[in-house]
Structures are given as structure tokens and as C-alpha cells.
Length: 411
Ligand SMILES: [Zn+2]
Image (cartoon, rainbow, N blue to C red; front, side, top):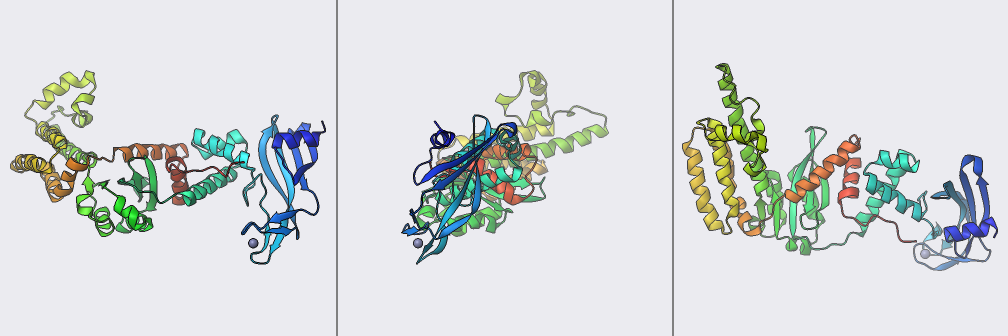
């Protein structure tokens, strides 16, 4: 078998294309393959499919293919151009690559697979022996492709969360589909307009399909949702995850203040106890159990704050908003009677948002999924040593968490 036939079979080259020439450079570990086509061929216009004669050829282009027998493999061809009466002059589509790509379809699929496994551009480019820009280009194109293919499907449960970019200097808003565990949208800042950007992209049917939205008690997200989602008042859920985060914050403030006061008298009782107060009891490591048993039953202020926090957990067990409300009223009375300022402040916050905390009783959704995605996003950011700008970061989030169909058309 001649080498041109061999490579035609390896590459799956079909008429009208054929392998014209093969140049194997053993010392350079590479093989160059020239593809050509016969004369008199008619080609479809890439816009309308109308069959047209070849007008002329574009200059030679090169595509990187999967290695063959560990040889770096490059395809070369001059692509015919057609002149469509309706669409003008265009290069025709070649069966082995997408328009404007410098990789064959198989190579591009492989790069996407490696990226998915490696989860970093840097690691992938080292394995593939490509440049950062080349791998990045494939990733960007894959995301564009995936987003354009995305259908306007109904989304029943949403989670909205913020994400600090560059250590809190700026934020990004991330919208998740809680059922599919995918990132649906990423926008800059955490303003009303950040979330509106997402809602504006949804069709009226999609907006109608939303049953509940989990979010923090963050006014801009609340007002954006009220303005765009029908009957949003009954659908916004300030979920247990966010609520407890605020309450934990208050307990921690009480501890800090008390610890400071005790230390002025040389009392180190609270030293190194920060996390003991924040654990759920069932998650407290066994070695801390004896110490904490003494602490939590003491007359310390933080012990009282901790008891308040733990008591509030019962709220999440109520299936009826009415009973939940009764429970909360009792709880808030206890808080108000106390002299723990941070607890009072968080109590006021919860009171103000009570209606949309009680929606949890019915919808029972939390941003836990979004938080899971969040940690995935954090690790993307960490592994990549921080994407240099927000657009890069956005693309990476969509690539790894968007649940998109990333591959080029099948070969
Ligand atoms: Zn045309």
C-alpha cells in the first residue's frame, strides 16, 4: 500500500478529497499530509447549500490533527472558494474541520476531552504540546458553540449567588439550575442589573416555568426577581444555607467580643474555640466533644448565642408556613429579651425577610447545589492560578460547569 493510501485510510479521507502527498520527517517526529481534490467538482455554498463550480482557491491552510503513530500530524490543503449569486464569495466547508479552526474535528474533540479531565488550560497545553492560546481558543470556541446550541428549556428551580473575584475587590453573579446542577448564567457585579441580565434572556414561558429561586437576603437580587418573575413574592426563598450563614456570623461576633473582654482579665477560656461554635453538633470532631460539652453548658454569652442558633435549626423542619411563623415568633422573642447585640441584629434581618424565609417550608430548596458548584468554580480558579480577566473566568465557568454540548459536529 502506498503511503498516501495508508494515510487516506487512517484519516478517513473521502471523495472528492484524496491524499496527494505525504512527507514523513522521522528526525522531527512529524508527518505532513497534503489533501487535494479532483477537477470539475461542484461545491455547496456554505450559506445556502447551492452547488457551484470552484471559483479559485484560498491560500494553503494547515490543521493540526491527532498524532498518528506518535508523529505530530499536520494536514495541508487549499480550500476551494465558490461565488454564490446570493451570498458572494466563500470558502467551502471542509469535512475534517470547522470553519476558521486550526485543528481537525477529531483533534478539537480530543483537546476538549483533555481539558475536561485536566481542568486547567496550562496542564492541558503541556500534555498536548500546544500553546496556551491554542488551547484557550478551543475552549472559547467550545463555549460559544455550546451556548448557541442551548435550547430555551423550562427551568424550575434556580439558585442565585455571588462570587468574589480577586479577593472581594469585585463580584460576579452566578445563576444555577438547581435540578441540573449547572451554571446557567454568569454576569459581572452583584447589582440588580447583574441578575436582570439573566432574566431578560429568558422567554416569557421560561419565566413562567420558574417555581422557586433560592438566594441570600440581598436586596438587588430580590428587587430584580420581583420585577421580572411572575408571582415572585411566593417563589423567592431565602434558604436555610444563607440564613444560617448570617446567624453563624452573629454567633462568631458574640464570641469575639466576649473573648476580647475575657482576655483583658487574663481569662483564656475562649481561646481557639472559634470553630467549635460553628460546627453542627453532629459534625463536631470527637476529640473536641468533652471541651465543648463544658463550654456549651456554661454561662458564657456565646453559649447562649450558640443555643439560639441551634434552636433556630428547628425552623427548617416545618412543612407549614403558619407553624413556621409561630415558631419564629417565639424564637425572636427570646432573642429580643437577650442582651446579645449581634444576635438581635441578625434577628431583625430575619424578621424583615421572614415571608421569604418561610417560603422554604413549601419549596424546600437550598443553594447547597450552587455552593457545590461554587467550590468547583473556586477550584477552577485556584488551579488556573486565577484567570487574568473576568471574561476568561466566565468562559472557564461555562466550560466546566455549564453542562453545555461542547463538541464540534461529529466526524
Ligand atoms: Zn449561497
